Image (cartoon, rainbow, N blue to C red; front, side, top):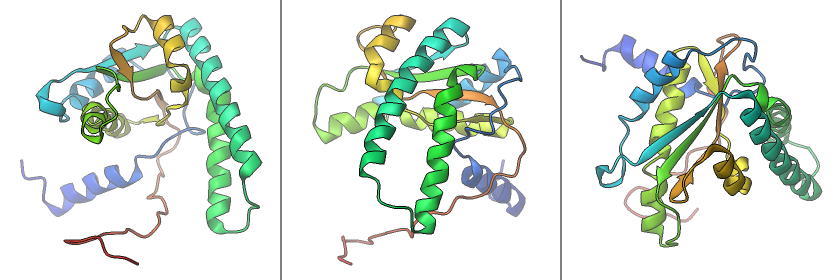
Length: 219
């Protein structure tokens, strides 16, 4: 299949540039079918992994009580983080500041409602980040993060949204105990998953790209 046709490129570019972290537009009232999650996971594990070990693991949480407990830990982490951020925050003056205020409002909404998501997905990888060497860290997380992002893209293509979150990792041990995750496994993220409302996602405003060809140029 030739993907490099103008039509195919337009579809792919739209998917890649409009896959957002969805929070306020997650539809918590609509069930998510197990087979859809499984289809998306089959796609996700086509991603690369270090030395092709394929040590990824995905914990799928649909049990209401377990979601509630994870949500409690997530809220503790979020409100603690936000309190520290607010204490050191500068006054809102610029368009970038106002955009950040909208992000914070959206993040607070998710923290308050994350237990209502039909599905929580925790991407994991075999191994622990014990070795501080950059190569070891890059190999470990580089073996799960591409698959997690591919999962978000696959979900988006099927009308489901998700949000990349990591705050629950402040309580990784408690979540591991709750879900029976073994000691030698590292949790990488927490993705609340639900069908999204509407379909008018747009490319986000980003800072100018900084590129350095052949050598790092000073500004």
